[in-house]
Image (cartoon, rainbow, N blue to C red; front, side, top):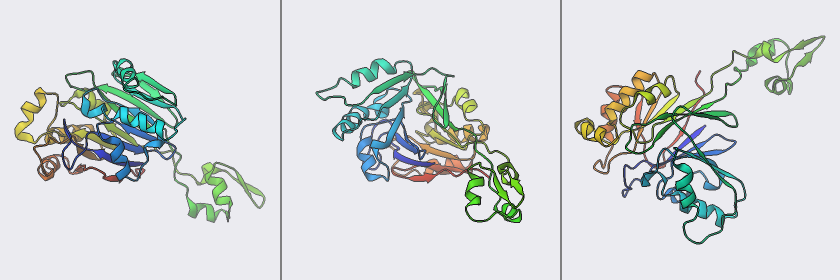
Length: 301
C-alpha cells in the first residue's frame, strides 16, 4: 500500500504546493483522494500514472478539491482509456460531475459512474471497504475511511521446515493448499499465525475539529488530516471550517491512530516546520506532508 501526496496546498496552489490530491496505490488499483487543479501534471512528476486510477473519492466541491477533474478525464480520453471510472462524493456529486463531463468539446470514451454518499454510509469494493463521516465545513463535505479486508496471519517458515516442508511446498501452503509430507498432510492453518486486521486510512478533507471524524478514525493505521493554520489562528480557521495542526494532533491522539500526516497548508506558511512541531508536541508520530512525498503503509505487526 503506497501513498503519494500529489498536492498539499490550502485554498489555492502556491509555487511549491499543488492543490489537494492524494494517490493511494492498492496494487490491484489506484485510488485518488480529491483532485485539485493541477493533479494530472503532478502525476507526471510522481511514480504513479493517472491512467491507473480506478476510483476517485471527492470530499467536497470547493474548487481546490475537484477542479482538476475536467482535465484529468479529458486527458484519459486522449490517451484512449476504455476502462470504467467510478467517482464517489457528497450528496451533490451527481449534478456537479454531470456538468464537469459536459465542459468544452470532447468525446467521453469510457463509462463514468457517479456515486453520491451521505455521512455514515459505506461501500464494499474489491478487497476494501470505504466508510464516511460528516466533516465540519460550510458546504456538504465528507471524510473517508478506507479499510482493507482482513488478512491471513504470517507464514511461520521455521515451523514449516521442522515439519519437513521443502521447496515449492512452502508456496503452496502460503497459497492455502494442503501438502503431503511422507505419510501425513500438513494444513495451512498449522503454519499460519492468527488473522491480522487490514490496514486503514482516514482522510478528513477540509474540516474544523469534528467528533464524527474522531469516531471514524478510531484505531486507524494512518490519519491524513488538514492543518490549515498554526495554533495562533485556529479560532479563525475553525470559523471557516478548518483546523490547526495542534487540533489535528489532538484528534489523532484521542482516536488512537498509529500515524498522522498533516496537509492542506495555508499559503502564509512557506515552511511547515512550525506546524509539525505544534502537532508533535501533542502526538509524536505527526508529520507534515509535502508535494510528491511517497510513503509505504506497512502491515502492522
